[in-house]
Image (cartoon, rainbow, N blue to C red; front, side, top):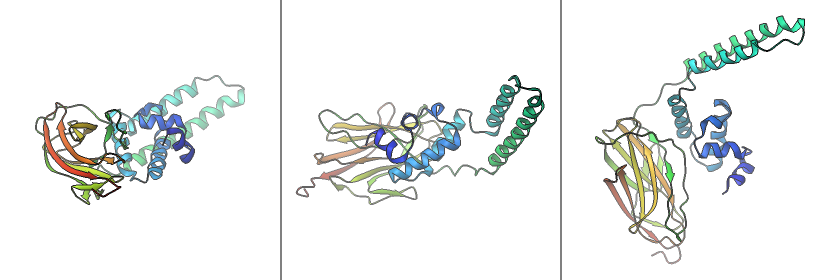
Length: 268
């Protein structure tokens, strides 16, 4: 579906949908609205919104935003701007600063209270949704993909893959429907568990049809134990031998899963 179609269905402007798709957080209209857009978008895509919201919160923190200090700094800047505006009449000179001052006190108190009540981050072992960068060879059809994460840069020297598999879904951050044979039209998950890494390390999920790269997704590792996945729809006409590999950024293969896509016409 096009961004225009999604905008019409979700009533989110194309401008903000494009900002979400390209990780342009500065273009979003603030945390409350941005989180609402993410929830609506996830609901429309029929996917779990929480990993997306977690990724958004983490990205905001990495940018130094969303903290009580950041919110207080923004409010102080707003107070400074408002206080420097000329009054339009004698009566407004006393009322406006007092009204703004009370509003700012309430906002600062509310922001600080909300930040203190914000739940602490989950334990290290959790999912990291993927930003899929698709590079299908022409003239083969491009794969359907989900784009939901931000990717920092760091070496992966101590990182290894303890588990991997291909299946029909991820439930409670674990792979379900593991198999080595899937029909055309199925959406499948390549799931991996990385150990020994650290926040900022990166890996790649590389999907291959035969010997040709069909999709190459760069993923972020967030802790020493980290589960992550990418998804792919096996489109009509893609029957044959497939493989999904975990590679380092430099190209070293850390794990490989092979499977067969069977034709929806004859089941072979």
